[in-house]
Length: 286
Ligand code: MG
Image 1 (cartoon, rainbow, N blue to C red):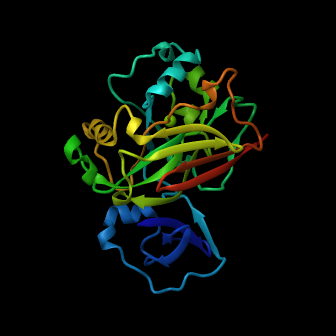
Image 2: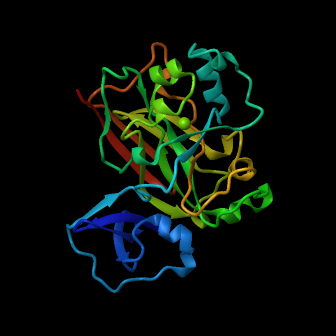
């Protein structure tokens, strides 16, 4: 099933999506997809309200996650190679596949919705990059989750754009700030329950202004979803509604020579099979 978080007269609600249209509302106690992840899809409560025509705004499925979004770096071989070739920093010179997942995070407040604007201040960064990513939404929480049990803890999936200020990322040697600017986590357009997605064969494609830049498959992940969950939960309790972006494939702006960073007016479109299409325009602000 697909679910979107929507605003109806300013109130957050959750709607089931059929095709690309909201068809039924959940009861008002469900105000975000995170509430379904917490309750379990089998415990959702439907509303009898009729969907109001033309009065609904689709927002991010989890507009304000309860804590940072976990992200995996360098999780596709081709991306490891392009990053190494970019001369980005000392760590990037290493073309070897990482021995362990590289995990960082983005602040919750940087989440925006499908069609919201990715905004950046050119005085702060002139190297804005896109990263189309397949993202996991945790259902049942837990600590020390074994790989073989991990998928039972996944509620569903969505799309995330791990927008990054490459110059800030490089300057600080640490990724948190350059990946957490306001508006730097487009998410959505909705979320899909785990049963609808084949982790062994899901296409991820990203376009900038219609030019195909990323074209990959989740089967090419270096560290798969169960491994990521086992690694994270070894010492950190995972909670329902936690979001984990699994890493970006090759084809980011910094991988080109010269780099193709985002500029004012660019449109980034990410499609993942079964998850829909997430599109955001870039706007420079002063
Ligand atoms: Mg990323």
